[in-house]
Length: 357
Image 1 (cartoon, rainbow, N blue to C red):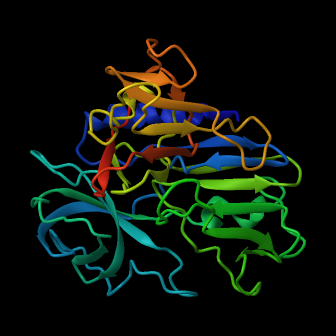
Image 2: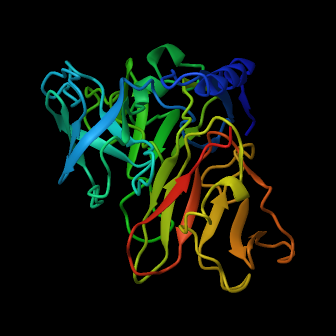
């Protein structure tokens, strides 16, 4: 797959980043990327941008799963909670930096309720008690099927289906919560009669507001003509933390993507420096592995085109000389890939990725 970043986005990045040194409050740079989605093929995609943040402020205190925000933002009750037909957005709180230490920096938590100056979060088993006051927090809407694939893009980024049984473009959502490896998709979406539908659900239900995981990927399965997906949004200039799930008894696949509009080398992913990726003892005893897919190769249910592992302080590529360093190999912008964790103690490990721009 060829994925390009626009000159506008590059210019915006430079302008936005140069302004960081000139003022304390800035608007994140914006831009767009495009991705070719071949016919009769699966394309592994992630969203390169966030939707524009709707609030940036500071945390005053933490209690359980609730953040109290400094100042008087004056929110209305549950304005950040999805409500079908009246409030189409689902929001998450992104924990930003702190002047000293912040163990939760870059982690995002879905907002389940809010008051005039408070946010209640779904921690999914995580702990936010270590967040200090004055830590930055951003409120951002999740990307959705309808925001990434609006109806106006039919026959451009996707092809409408003729029926629920003749689906021409499908969006496959991995089973993020399932145990083990080589997991089947947990949900399949298709566009029919002017809206996104979910296979197995009534074809009168509109699923355009269903979210696309921020640090995960989705598969665009195109059985019609080639299409091109263009994504637009705000460039994430902050750290992003990806939870990697493990099992105590078997290997565990994690279906991931990072919110970056530029390619990132293996060395710059942060997998090793954050301690989230285990080293292997040999090329034949690989503990943790990273699987990358060739989006330019037309195939359904394609196998990985490259398998990486970490050995003797360097990235190696399976099938290649294990003494060669492949750390400069790039993860293209806006792609999905798999991190297969070896059996460990079953705890979630957090991978922190910092921007390279």
